[in-house]
Structures are given as C-alpha cells and as structure tokens.
Image 1: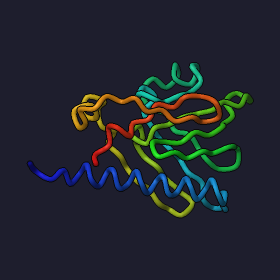
Image 2 (image 1 turned 180 degrees about the horizontal axis):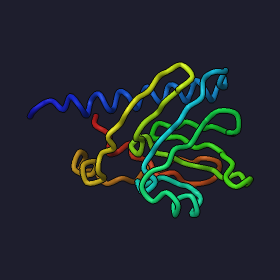
Image 3 (image 1 turned 90 degrees about the horizontal axis):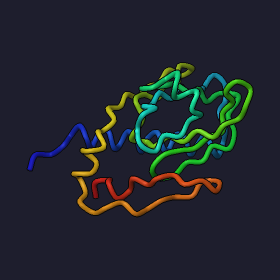
Image 4 (image 1 turned 60 degrees about the vertical axis):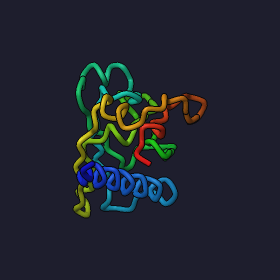
Length: 148
C-alpha cells in the first residue's frame, strides 16, 4: 500500500490549526493578528444559521478578530459565538470542512483539501458512535474516521 503523503500533511496541518485555535481560546488575539477561516458550509457537522448557509451554499469565510466569543476547541473541530445581523449565533466547524486559514496581519496561511465523506468512511470500517458535547449541543465526532 502506497503512503498517502498528501493525506498525512493535511492531517498534520489540521493539528496546527487546532493548536492555533487552542492558543487563541486561552490567550486571545493581539493586533495585528486576526484569522480568516474558510470552510465548506455543506460539509457534515457544520452548523451555521440557515440564512448564512442559504447565502453561502458551498463555502463561507468567518473572521476571528474582535467580535467572537466562547471559542471552544475539540479534537474534531471548533465552536465559536459570532454575530450575524447583530444577533449572536454559535458556529460549529469540523476540521475536515476547512478550506483555508489565513492571518493576513502576520502574514500566514494554510490551504486544505477537505476529504469526501465517502473517503472518511472507507478509511475506517467501524461505524461512528461517538459525539462530543459543546455547551449542551451535540457535535458529531469524526474520531472514528481518523487514521490511526
């Protein structure tokens, strides 16, 4: 079996994003840093207000700068409170849904190729039964789909 170099690099980069978000959750962001996070809105486990999904059926970019709250970072993704149309909403993003993460203040950026759900399912034959709790709402865990 051939080594999946690209898959290994993508997985490592998702770990880098997780570490960045953990640092932000613990220490906040200092100017000039701010993150543009672009992700697939149609990816399983993404949770956005319906009007945002309707306006952005394939992908959307959120900004973590001054007005975000309650950033929670899990093994499989993150959740954050953002304001849309002057109303706070919780946004949930699995790391597998990421397309890019950019900090134009530094500058720094990462690009991703989200795996197809079918690819995740074929990587692990065990069915997924895990879930993680975030502020009382369920976030589907994709841990059982990760390569071991």
